[in-house]
Length: 480
Image (cartoon, rainbow, N blue to C red; front, side, top):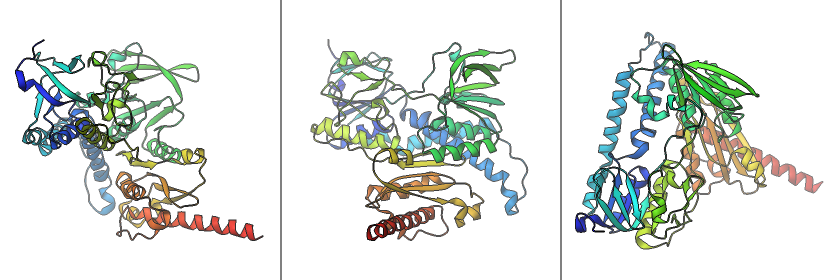
């Protein structure tokens, strides 16, 4: 079949998806000298910029400002109860999305490298080396492809599920409901929980696991739950599943779920499903390209190559790290392997993660439970925000930082926190871990005063003291 447009439709590398992974892959491949096409449906930025991380962070800032205004009286600033203008908040979100898109300048940067951004609808493989664009019918061919199609909000298969929102639909509401039910307490679910509560919305949070935020360290999960309940958030864990969702007269909805074998109901103005993040591969035509899927994600090897030797996958599409900070590294590696050949293998690293909840939560490396189950002897120490001068000054004394180290070497293998600025605090530990630092090294760092990050030094000194006491006890036992 003739390719429409001649040479302009032939590229060295075609990248499908322009989120964090896709943009990074396209720019890296262009820097290496490849002629690149970066494809997306109708706008750059992917989920992260347009409907995910960026909008959610603006909502979190708005919630934090409301909290701080309400607490200003403690510092002698007399203000009334703040009022949220939802329409203005949404406008700020949309302007921020545009500002970040403009700042990244992906289209201009790729053009300067001889590449092209093409926004002509969904791309579908016609065969192993050719895709068709839905809006124009244009066909592109390439020697290499990088799939960076990201993921999408999951939905549960129950009657009435179409009535529920997914998190990306929140900013499309003309007004906030008075009450919501959030199903799922992963990173997105817990963040929306505290944001909406700060906005004055009554929130019920449902979770199938025994604890909220199941991936987190158990102490972090418990701390968040206690804080949420103090804020008036209703939390129900250990549910068996959702049975149905029904629309009621007056615009409310009734959700039926199962708990301890019995049906329970909750009525709210809206239901939000935050129940997973499957790869966005529907309609991509992977079968025509010879690309295999495993458990809903594109299967890749350690070089991020798929079952088709000329096609690579990076970011959420391959189901590995599922974090923006990991997607950038995956994308550049995929681009290097696509252009130069499979010379580099993906080295899994400890990625810091967290959420801008109230309080914030963050973690990197092994949780305490994972460390104990790994068979490696470890030492754990906890420093509390209540003992931190900055937290006392700011009246944010709820929280802690937990450090986990190998017992023998003292190397830090995990850290977990709940508290103000926990995500920022975690960066210091993540940097130390990347350098192979020990508790003794961190204990000797002079952190600026008064800062939240100083809690890293406090925790490290406690950890080192505990390790020293353990070593001394062992030595005494040997002498005896």
